[in-house]
Image 1 (tube, one colour):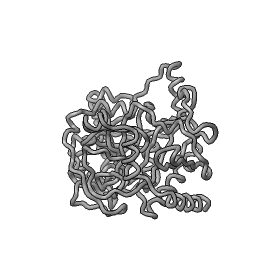
Image 2 (tube, rainbow, N blue to C red):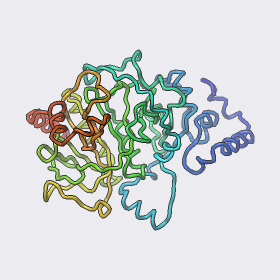
Image 3 (cartoon, rainbow, N blue to C red):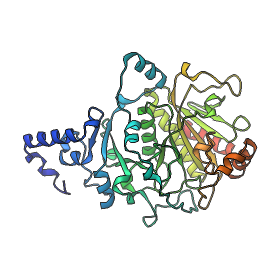
Image 4 (cartoon, rainbow, N blue to C red):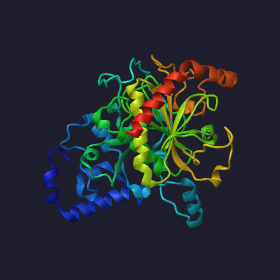
Length: 403
């Protein structure tokens, strides 16, 4: 549908629409009953889902190139009914009921190809945590049609602000693991790499929908190893749990926890979602911490994962059988030193994954020579903040949460 044709939808013959839907269904058998529809189907049949078309009267229009790319993607619809609070209970029920509903990550894997990630884009240099978006540097409005994998739509969100959000998942030009993709919230708004409430909610909802406990959502701020100044997060599998899930934390306030050296090699805030009724509280706490870090010009990294309930008593580290405990959506936030300049792609660059204890090696030389002492030294030099800075931030976060 071209711009301005929305008012003519009512004149479409119903039988013709049914015929088109049947043809589209035959072309997309693998998507049947999995909440996935072709975008062009939505464009020509707005009344099917109740969503606006991609071409709306919003001030935030996508460039033609990106519009064409998203139009060829698929729409993944979801609601709060798809959210899984305790993944362990869900897995146990699956074993009993043999329930098999296609997962978002499984859909991405069917589209993911290694050849899509062979052209690594040159890392960019940044000088400020809040550097404005620059349309002349690389950004995700320049994606090619084959690079956009999925267009996300939440059927529970009917507010006007969400109706103009255009959220996509795209390929990663330099994936760490098979299936490593990019979550791009509000792509049409051309936002800089500053975490927003919508991005935090989107990351949380994707974690709640994903049935694979090895999947994580990561975010790196500018000066915190982000390589593109256009708001994005990483959606990726990592087959090893972070050792953070076995650590004891100290309670700060309400649902906010904290761990510091020597109990972990870098300072870390932790927030955990215990029930769907506490979702807003979970999101509000994350937004509060993120806002304080941004206002105080402190770079940061996010690591969303599944973890057992946070522990505040006992030994500093207690390894448990995680299959016997609830598996809850948990976010670890790492405040860190700022790193300016483009990151060399083959160096060890501590970002969200590494600060969670999941080490990556891009060269055989580093893999063969790396040890714990050397890695900790790099983290201390490039990421670890002074204790007095951390204490100041904790006090400000406490005040903000109290208010």
